[in-house]
Image (cartoon, rainbow, N blue to C red; front, side, top):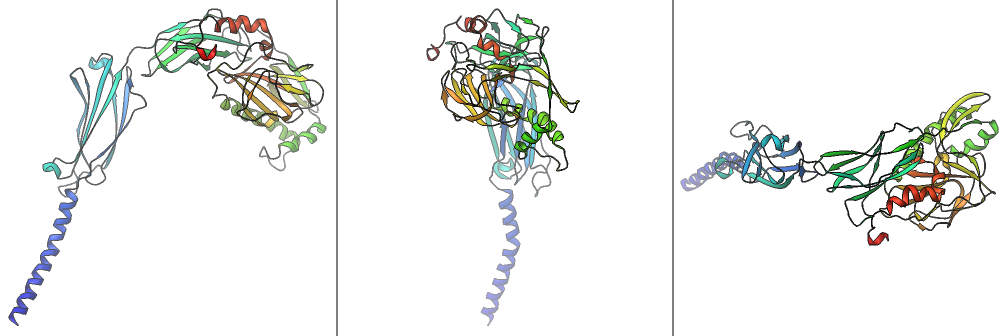
Length: 461
């Protein structure tokens, strides 16, 4: 009996001891956890310019963050950029701060660091009791390149004679690879493209003057290197002023009854809105949306010159409307809208065959709002041709087409008042006067003579 009581007593003591020991073991397990803190360093480029800001994200969900240390090292010289002790929540609770974002600025000249290779070192500790209460440590090292000098720009093309609403070409070189370079034309920017010439630093940039950009428009080259250093160079140029035609367009009920049903699934409009209200909405808002869609498509272009020689005009066609005609729309004698016509309207026989103006790759072949069935062709380096109001398209996206190849038939789809072709030339995001591209002498003097000054890479010969 006594032996049974002793055993029971031992069991009670064991159970009580286990109950008392479990929290201690649990605490030791938590406080001696071995998960290291996390470091996320956002580096868009390994290059550092005159001023650079690093964004560092730190996290330790278990024990909390204890200490952060950041330094830059070059040629044996170390500059500490951050050495912070973070607060504790108590002996048994770890750190108060579980996550932290650190923004650190670094100016090489301020610390007397010259250009060249450098190393960014980061270390972070948590409030774990591991490592003799020093905590778990994460260490990260990143190799960087300090570059505080802007790229050098050389303008290679010399004569830049342009017409308001017209096109041109600038060829230039930069002394180093740049994350962005191109031509600033007023408030508009035209990217330059490498790839045509043997020297990869030589770039070609087609530019366009908007119909509103006349004499006095500033043109310059801008280049930003990988470290963010910016350089600019002026471009000697001459711009001829051009006056565009005014055109009055009468909108009739017959036209509205014919055309507005085509757009019922395209626009959202109040059911009580009149047909003329719907027309105004289409002519303004949908026109703007269509332009944005076109320019979005034109952001991707081949770095290959796909075209050759003069661009073709649709055979046997007559001009119906000119480029940059300033249109005033009337309904029952009242002005209801004003728009600018950014192309040429060419009329021939009904459903006339439409040839590709030059060789290229089809990037779009679908209905496009006010333009109806539309084809866009990429000719390389940001140069595109557009064919709108088609009755049908005979090509598909991604198809390679040759100059003169039939791509569709004229029609009256979209906001067209009759069977014709709306033909446009687009440079990056700007519609320019197509007539220039039909002129062999203009192309030779303003485009090809510049391109052929330097030897092309083998793929372009």
